[in-house]
Amino acid sequence: MTDEATTARNRWLAITLTRVVGSAGAIFGVVLLGRAQSWGPKILGVAIVLSALAMIATVPRALAHRWRTPPAP
Image 1 (cartoon, one colour):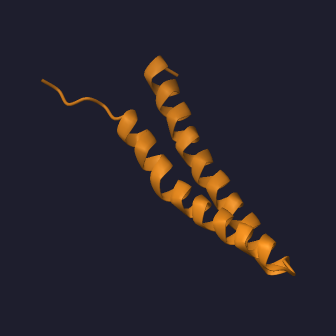
Image 2: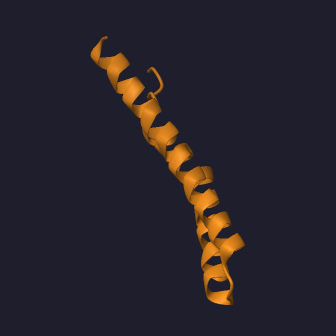
């Protein structure tokens, strides 16, 4: 593999892993929300789900924007 192909693969893996970790966090929040008996853990579960969804929506896009190929002159 060329250096550019390796870099592209690593960046794709980083974006994909960000999505997977965000999804795992959302699942963890839903499980916490479903098993909670009192309001404190329920509120924490909602906060974890919302932050994980925000992460899934924003971080991969920010990474793609940061690593985008500059336009040719």
